[in-house]
Image (cartoon, rainbow, N blue to C red; front, side, top):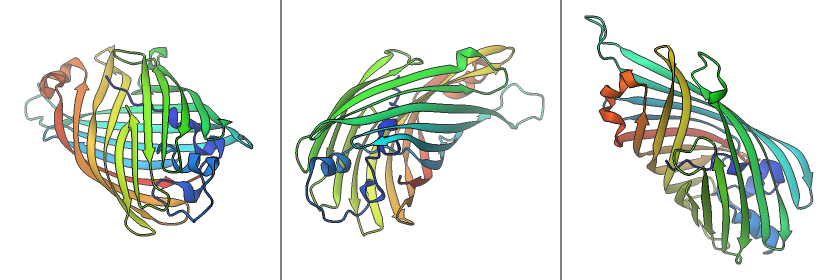
Length: 305
């Protein structure tokens, strides 16, 4: 399963002080002299460190709702170096079709799963146009019915960024995830392109996302993108612990509007393709966990640090 580098974003902004409100992706930027530091900020891969979002997917049988919240706090800020904490919470709710219930019982069975995250991350300048970012985090993901150490997850990441010029930058690194299905360590590769003064931005962050955005006005912008999603939880089901997984991706169109100098509202609509691993009693209702297309919608409020 391709798990996205959930905590690679920690070494951004809130930690290293590298992003201001004007440096947020898609935000208008004032004219300024081209410098290595300016280019590093402008050409950093997009990562939403502080936000609140609600998303829903529906494939005709299964309804999935996600509520996510992230908040960050800087610990150390120095010239060219920073360290910070990122806190996250996620609630995933499945509306599952009931089978084999009592006569006349045609209701739904719901499954609610929680995820709590704490991550320490930071970044620093190695040389003009070069910077490093690293993070280590832990998460607890379960239905909270019976606390267990098996629901504890560990993720860490490291990434080095090179600014190739005023318009382009690349980054390479790796992310480790203790709950990965296949490879615990995945390579990361990023490329960002935005010409000085241009309204167009291309952001490629493999295996996390690919997105192209265009600034329509000083406060309004549109984007097209693909984003990978993967999660693992431990749930108590029928007197035993079961692993619940979700993996896949979404293709979406996005419209974002700046509400203030530091906040923006984003609306996404698109198509998701997901594979679900659910408790055994419910698997029969889910076409054996196969990849299934579903409609996707998301509303998010983002805060630029």
